Length: 158
View: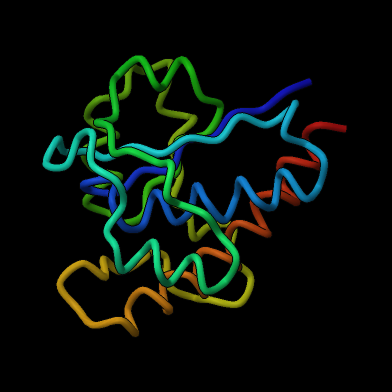
């Protein structure tokens, strides 16, 4: 059995590539990279083809995550068929994705923070317009949720 996950934020340069980098490392460290596919995308095409925000890359690198090879892309309706899970970072992203989902694909859509155990927030805040502390907060939240996500997928892979 295999599984596939796509993380989605607005422009695919801060939160979703950070989630992808964290989760990809967890998957690799667990020896599951042959069984779990990981990607990220944005609901809008503002930054298509661009690397993640330099602040996100730097904050992630300080914790051992490499985002340098990632490039922004826009989420496509077909992604609902390509991925088992479509994980939105906030309610606005979830709303856009819900409108794109075919009735057969809506069950794949969830909020990323549903998998967190240490945070009560359901939305990952967008750090783009804030200071460097926002990127560290996003990392804290996504590390927690990514661990819970891996546990949930592992349970389904058995």
